[in-house]
Image: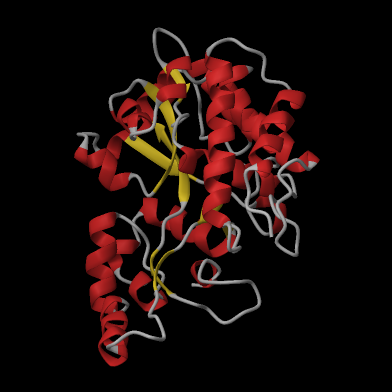
Length: 305
């Protein structure tokens, strides 16, 4: 699948690895809570998402939950918001560009779900261990933005009939190419080093792991999507939930930046967002200036060439 290959190396260069399994973000929503709140359909835009969240945030329950102390989750959402605003965190030649207007707007929009819109409980600023999934599974929140969550929700006792799944909202409401991306692809890949002592054995192992049979076993266990097209055709991956994930991967997902310093980017920007969530939880203002200052600090932490 093209989006999976996009996470296997530098753009325009041959893949440096082989995709093993694919995950996409989706919007999971509690059907009963939606019905009780008079919400007829899952939100397609972020404005609709906030409006739904406000209707759901009552009687000790909240619209949604976030892993505010998890840098990886933070950077995933920040990156998707940035792409929706037509922005990126790196210039075309790979230099960090964390403080451009689109990136600042994106991070602020994300943190504002707690700071301004107040559809996320302040305590979520400390979440880092999948607590948001647990809150959703236990009916404490009405919506969840997560990657391939079905197996996780089932393990926590939530019936598949209790929730629906829809594409992650975008600015306009229509997922598609360009700025309407609504999921990132990080890349769970296999690579073989050229200097391996057993090149033939390693290559055979890659072939085995990406074979149709093994892809079905692996991705069924993880409720993920096979990056191998032939394996995707198996009935196990044609459920309504998987249809949303497959469509997202095929049409509106993009790889995280394929740059040498990508891991440092995740840590720096993810931590900046964590600190902004802490401000929001404490009632400190989250402004365009404060977001830009946090991203400036993050950029200063990136390696210099």
